[in-house]
Length: 208
Image (cartoon, rainbow, N blue to C red):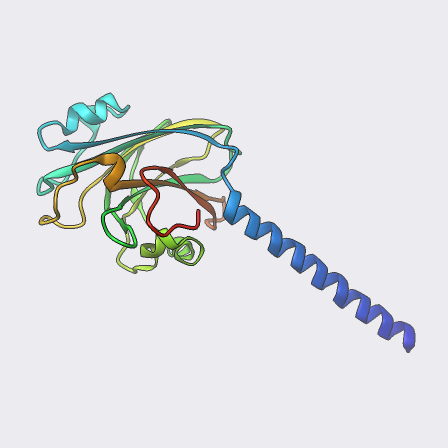
């Protein structure tokens, strides 16, 4: 009987240690995931008249792209990377850094290394609001098209375009000051692994 009790206690202790190690490892991934991925970012603000030329210059075919005709401005972002794991996907988001917390911009479409890609959003992404204060807007249920995805190949790129949150929004004046670009890693099961700010001034309140 005593051996059974000791074995049971040992099993509980081992399980607790394993849980603690996994929890610490996951916390470290939230904080430092993507540190080994080398990223370059180009961000430009285009008008209706310069949109096609801008996305073509940033890597997307001009004849395969569309923009909302009511949008006075479009934020065009090209993200290139090397050193990725080769599994899962990268999601690119752009945020309006002129408000606190920064507000996710609706995505209209994009072009990845393997061809055309579109905008998306998944409920699993809402965990980002709990992990990064500058992504608090990820908890807003209406964010149904805020990300543009691409396969997280070892090396690749994606060009994405985003519109202001409303037709009456004040125009962007300075892309680096007004716009934050982030890269989100999603695994093959659809779970978010980490997020990383890759362009723009760091939001006033930020934990990553």
